[in-house]
Length: 301
Length: 338
Image (cartoon, rainbow over all chains, first blue to last red; front, top):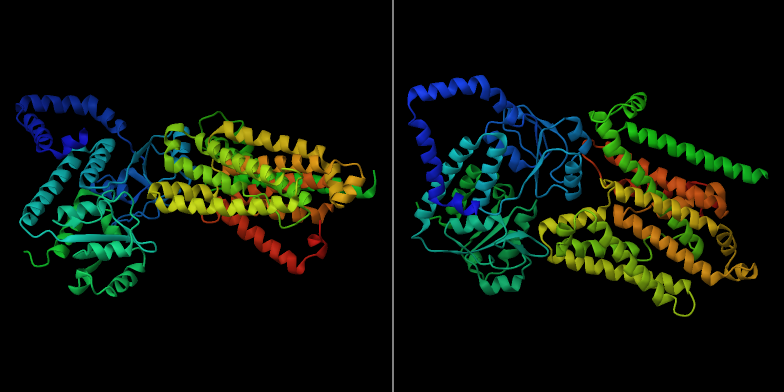
């Protein structure tokens, strides 16, 4: 329900209207409320929101940096990137397994887990009466925004999160508008080799293809396992290969043997860094989307 | 008391002392080091402190489960090797682990664990193991309990189970795949105290029941014919021992996943110390299996702390290397036939 609300213009407008109402309050009233807040509300406010956050996933960590909450993040995982010039945080494990002992020792008041966190460890953290919230893996732009909003809500930075989401949404709308009149290329996205594995609607990359005006030919499959024969039969205009470690280049070469494919004839096989497709925040989603548009519509302005 | 019996008792005491030392080291080491002297202090501290929580909520549960699983696997291994009179037999040879893994895979893929909660995974693992035990038992024991048939049936069922697991993995989603792989890797991280206590009771009961058969096992070590001449009901003994070892393995696998090597090599080493006398071999394997798994788990937690290795990696690397070393340089009586 909330997802529908977020996507609709009404929801964003409602949030805007509310902030406008606040802005139009008489100055005296605003000053009075500010004094009351400083005297009584501020201490409560600062206590209410978590001060010792542990992030168990790169997407969450990037979100926390974007929302300016890095001082409150005390630890993260070895896969989490630290922006240049910032102080490295303590590492407490990988995305899938973490040191429970270390988490208990650090006296965290908010642990942000992901869909990849080991289920047994998640249960153990809850048994230890720790405040654990799971931020699921986003499968499309809408979910990226919802996750980001939830993150903002949890750390008391809703307004900032809404502002960033709005900015990203405006840009996505702009891109959609631009690609609307263009031809819709048929795209196959390969995310695994041996066996050949393609992206269905379940994967975030599907949204990149569709929002940039392409058709994901394997979107409606139930499972991602695919046969090369079927790929030849479907004859996509573009083949996009995610890096998958070092296998990307080798896969591109193996596709080039099938000269009957339009994608091969027109030299339209591209390799995309799989990390970019993880799209941790609404803003990084937009930047990857721009790249995808450039790939699928090289001639468009 | 003969000198030999005295020496054997001394070995058991040494193994007991090693177990206690390993437990204390394991309580002390981790990604947060707590000095041994401080542990006593923490134990009497009020609940709520960080160190108290680390020792009681995290380390103690792992140590108890490590002991229960390690001792059960050691015991199961020594019983099966004695029964088959084959030092290459281990608890997983009979396909029990494959059955348990298949049960867990089906549970994860069908989404039962999401509805059934934390206990559903070990339960489905146990049901899978039980299914295989019953299948192997009835296929090989229609008339007489044929040892060769039992072994072959077990190995074949193991292959079938692993193929079915691969089939399930090929069609499962990423999150499900992760759950399956983690379970197969094995872990002693269990927060459910009901499971830990149950496993501990199962291992102790296993030792008690196995001990009732120690003279039968000693007789079986001479060969089935000789055992029969000594008045042992060989058929009944084999059936009972098979069921006992299978249940011990089934319970261990369903709680902690597949942790290799313990059930294969611990009986070897204990045989070196005590010789083929099951009165001591059973207790020795029980204690050593427990101590070995706790030690390996401590290493798994600390080697690249705060990252943690799967415990099966450590049991395999350390146990396997020591085993190969002894095989080529150690005393030859270690590998004499049972």
